[in-house]
Length: 207
Picture 1 (cartoon, rainbow, N blue to C red):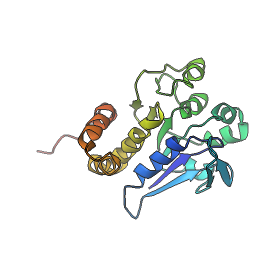
Picture 2 (tube, rainbow, N blue to C red):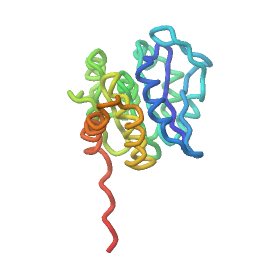
Picture 3 (cartoon, rainbow, N blue to C red):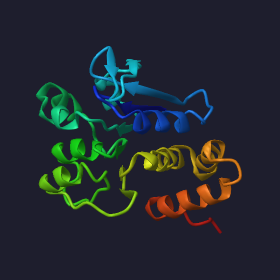
Picture 4 (cartoon, rainbow, N blue to C red):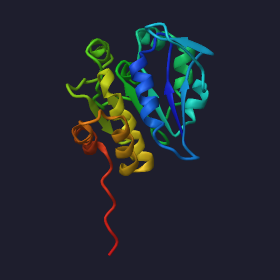
């Protein structure tokens, strides 16, 4: 399985790299997590340079995609070359999640029609102007689409993707690894409280 984190020029390190770290707690031969960038290198809002791990075209074929955020998301949605590539994203065949201003990308792609979203407070007016209701909560998902608001909500997106693709036990193991010592149970309980309402109901037991 391939999980791609879209990472653009001016990206927010917390949004892309926390998700990358949590997702990589899954250790399986068929599990690959990449940073997908529109150019060979991108520089963060704080000057951290990353090299491309996968292309946007490869991301559109991935099993799951996180649209990362940054200080230049409004420029991203005005870039027709990038947006035309991202029209290959399809929630009917892949999990699609957005972190903070990544929700603006999904809104402009028409993927949030009639679906509320979570985003950061700076991005909220732009997402609302795009015709999307913004919720005052850190995480929301419907079917194969999820959004999170606030940098430190990125582990909710990662855990949701792991739970959907590898099961709840794998998601809890990943969260337990990264949660602070002495506070692991509280962190895990909070994460499940936010994520569980948006996970598919378990299949009934066969009798």
